[in-house]
Image (cartoon, rainbow, N blue to C red):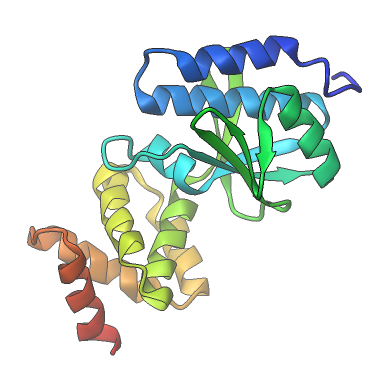
Length: 208
């Protein structure tokens, strides 16, 4: 670890190379996230990828974003700003921007379970897929976010057979939304077209 976040020339170059590469979008996003995480780690902070960037990692065929959202622990806003600007990102409102890459830090405490992945020469912490799915199901259940319902279905399609269902149901039970998982699984098994209108009808048939 180094005391100065300005000593990040190597990671700045790595971020430039990752974002400008000809790889698949999810590969560019994931490697960029790993480089940014490494820079924050170098300054004694711990970053976890959440939100749309995590969703694209788990369901690259169904979702694409240019936003990287991190929960960053053990760091001040000033310290985070120093590190991100050392990578060539410029502050604009709530985002740090480099070309068409947008970075945001919406939180400083990670209570959800996480997973770690080796991405090239780096390690990336990402919110665990079951926790991400639980967030989407709760958003659909209580906030009527039809996009979250669609993303929930896509996540279930992606890893239903290998997910930790006990963990998922426990998180949903704590939010009073376990029944919504069963509802969405039934919709998935029905083979019905996944549309906003269908998710709207499904919600109103059970929660009006």
